[in-house]
Image (cartoon, rainbow, N blue to C red; front, side, top):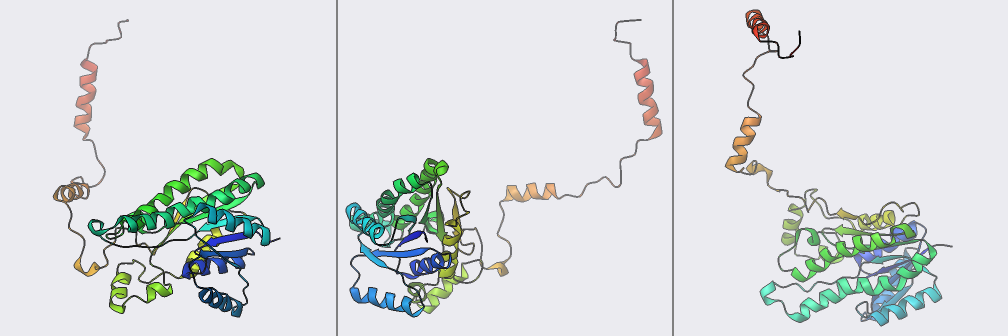
Amino acid sequence: MSRVAVVTGGIGGLGTAMCKALIEQGRRAVAVDYNGLSQEAVDKWKADRKAEGLDIPVYLADVTDFDSCAETCKKIEAEVGPIEILVNNAGITRDAMFHKMTPEQWIAVINTNLNSMFNMTKQVYGKMVERGWGRIVNISSVNGIKGQAGQTNYSATKAAVYGFTKSLAQECAKKGVTVNSISPGYIGTEMVRAIREDVLASIVKTIPVGRLGEPSEIGRTVAFMTAEDGGFLTGEDVTVNGGLHLRWAPDRAAGPAPRHNGFARLEARLHRPSRRVGPAVQHPRSHARRRQARAARPDRRGGP
């Protein structure tokens, strides 16, 4: 029997790619998404997947509400099977510079991006431990690593994912349950590709590999982390962002970045050529003088 894999935010661009990758791995993928979605949107998504030969059940829930998560997971287990893989992918943005950010914007992002991780994981964690097998993958972001102006709320939640992941991984490391996270960068979902062309081009210019990521690349990373033989990987984050978290200057034509004077002086000393040419050679006369000096020293051994 295929293991059941639940993906929150499952009918979005990344969630869809994750579901597909999990199915390719032999899992029974289940999409959980926002209960405010229209039935028309859900039906269209299911029809698109059916056209691809995929049958993915969709359950609607409010992941910010503990009881809603409990009810949804109970329903999935009754209708599909025990949840052995959980991907916490649900997330929103409510961007604003901090001096303009409202409490409502802050709380909405905290509830959806962070509290949902607790709400969903709590429903399945205990049973995973009892069965002695489970895979939990939490989706963070490159902005949880480097931060982003206008996203103090979003970046705070994504940074919190690391603490949650590493702590829970330590609790269940010996129980057959792994907990890991993924930090995507700019991925070419429909939402990202809808960004104005010139703005998108400026974003791509900051990515060292020179392109957007593909949703399938995140999907394959999820499949890798949830593999049957993946039990030795836990408490880790995999950054899939084209090197965006690195200190990288896109404009190499301007030459190397200026160095601090003290560092430049140190570097010059380290690379200064030695004044010595060839191997050191001792002059015979200096060697003889040292022998004579040693012979003239009084014997300090104190014996005959």
